[in-house]
Each structure stands twice: as structure tokens, then as C-alpha cells.
Image (cartoon, rainbow, N blue to C red; front, side):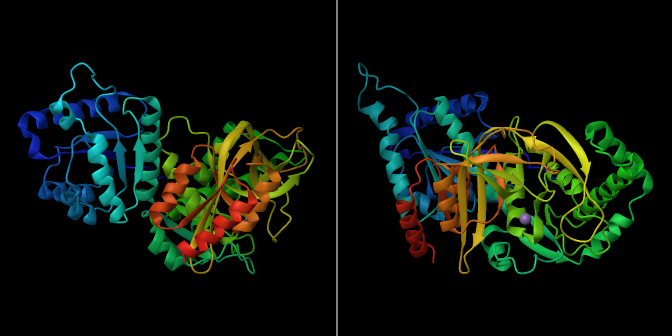
Length: 498
Ligand code: MN
């Protein structure tokens, strides 16, 4: 499975030649030192590369051009050490096509009260220069992140780190290709959408294949490869026979092993990073892909059930965003299933027929073979487990007919009170912020789907910034959400984004 490139971020310091070469020498020393310390901080997930001080139209334009052309450059961090007349930035910014961060900081933390003179003020005037630069970026209507604060403070470094993850999402979104195995489930509204507009807005290529074209790959998987993968499953997961014959059980598991290998070969050959299936259109496949899809998601593929290509692309996007993180907790396709409405214990049990990613598992993962209540195929094998607790986000990208909206809900994942021995699927359980009632009311008012792209590792801010970069509306459902204001926000979005 493809992972992220060896991405880097460029650090571009703005100045001008009005204050002489000695001043420019200091500017260079300072920004080099900042880059060195930021890289040594251990906080940033990607390296920062220092670039020569930008003082002229020509050099600024040339630098932004080179940033566009460099496949490893995932974005540019800009900062004005001195004053830098912002007309010099117009042509470069106009042509720049990558994520932009305006780091509004200052080399020195404290005013040197005893020694400060006019030379010092001219040299250290980020408060002045960054306002001039910020003005032109706003006037030009360029979407960018602004982070203010002292560059050597951990919280500022953590915000830069967080923005880097968003920038990877912005860059990688344009490399996502979704393989649709069959079409959307008949009559379902929310999994539909405008695929042409999705390619224009997000860069996603979304193609359909007849299910039997991929089923042929599954048929062609050699028996020895199937056997080896089944052995891997049996060594890695608990085998939960629950009264089934061990030989018959193993045959069912082997069908999923063949699907995993055949599907992965198909996706690799044709360069897809996400896929959808549909339980009602399985062609020659013997089982609904269950365990196989769970394993593919674990390897980084995006997935959406019932033909839900929007969620499949979002799951892939969020997986690639988190792939550079240390110790991620997990990202998955998910579905709102059933409520617990006991006062004080409110929450939504999350699951799907089968296809939940094991990266979110907490504790042992088992294999079960059980009948599927829908469709007309063999009992599919699936991985079962419960999920981690803690803060997470659930996102839903919807098509409103004339535009997209991303709904982002902060959720608190919890353990269910008791085991659910008769439930043959992986689950998570969460309470939406600010509480179940308001969270669910806001979600429904916003038009959110029953499918979500879910992650413990990303924040609402990161996904909202990604949406802003894509030029679409993002609405947040969090601890501050109140229905009356939320409805006003939706009305405002209808005007701004129509
Ligand atoms: Mn579903």
C-alpha cells in the first residue's frame, strides 16, 4: 500500500534591503537558527527546509515556482522578520498552488528594555511586517493558516505540527483514486453525489468496474497464497468457532483471504487507494467482503459500504493524513447503528454489517463466521473487537445538490457497560459533543449521513482547515454547539457557498 512521500516544508523569511547588509545578515542567522531548533524540537512530523531570505519580487516569485515544482514540498511557511513591502509578494502568491502557513512570530521573546534602539526595532518588526504581508494575502483571497505566538513555545510548535497534517491532506487529496465495485445501493440518497464536482473540488478520480472483473482476480489467486494468508489470520487473531465445525469455518475464512489478495492485486495494478462494495451486487463473489475489507482498511485503503464513494475517499484521506504520526490510535469507516438512551449513559453504538477497520481495536481481535441478515451469499468471516476510548472526530461529507458540506462532530468514545456476546461485529460506542440530544439534532439539521469517516488522531480544526482549502463549507458540532446558533450558521453557509 502506498504511503506518504518524504514530504518537507519550506521556511521562507521575508525582509527588504532598506536596512543594509548587516541587518540582512542577522535576519538570515535568526531564521536559520529557528529552522534548526524547530527541526530539533521533536514536535514536527515533517522536516522544515530553510530558504534564502526573500527581498525582491523576482526571488519571491522564483521561490514559489520552485515550491510548486518540487514534488516533496508539501507547503510553505512564511514569516516577515522585518518589514517587507507586500506588493513584492503579489506575483509569487498568485502563482503558488500549495498549502500556505503564515507563522506570525518574532525571533526574540522579550523586549530588551535596557538596550533597545531604533536599529533593533527596524530589525525586529514582525508585528509590523506580518500585518503588511497578512493584508495582501487577505486582499488576494488566498486561503492560508495563520499561527501566532512565540516560535520556541511547545504549543506553537504543536500547532505547526497540526497544520502540517492538514497540508498533507490538501496535497494528497489530489492523488486519491476510488474504485467503485458495482454501483450505489438502490434508493439510498446520502451515498450519492456529483463525481465530476468531487474531482474538481477534491481531485478525486472515481471509477466504476463490473463486480465480476474484480471477482476474476479473486478466482485467480493461487491456493498456496490463500493457505499462507489463512495461516497468518490463525496466528494473529482468536478463532471464535462458537459451535461451528472447524473445517467448515476455515473454508469460510479462506474465501475472505482470497478476496483480500485478489482485491489488493486489482487495486495495486490499477492504482486505486480506496474502494466501495455493495452487498446487493456481488456477482461471482461467494461472500460479502468482510474480513478482507477490514484488512485492506488496516493497510491504508479507504472504504465505503453500499457504494458510498464519498466516505471511501474521506477514509483514505484521513488515513494518509495520519500515516506520518507516531502511535496513531486509528481511523475507520463507521456507521451510526443504535442508541443507548439511558440518562447519564447516552451514546451511539457504532458498527457496520462487517467492515470496521481493526486499527481502532482495543484488546484482542477475533474471527467469527456468521450469517449476514442481508443478501444471498455464504456466511462471511469477519473480525470482531471493541474499540479504544477517548476523544475522536466523526465526519460526514454530503452533497447538497449544488455544493458539498463537511460535517465534523467531536465525539467521546467509551466502553460499553457490558459485553455484547451475541453481536457478531466490531463496534465502537461514543457520545457526540455537546451531548447526545444536541449532537444528534445538529447532525440531522446539517444533513449528516449515517456513514462516517472516523478518527481518533485528527482534530476538527485540521479537517475544517482541509475543507476551507478545498473551498467547501465545514460545520462543527462540538462542546459549544447550541441549536439556535447552529441553524443560523447553516443559513449563513447557504448564502456564502451557493
Ligand atoms: Mn451502511
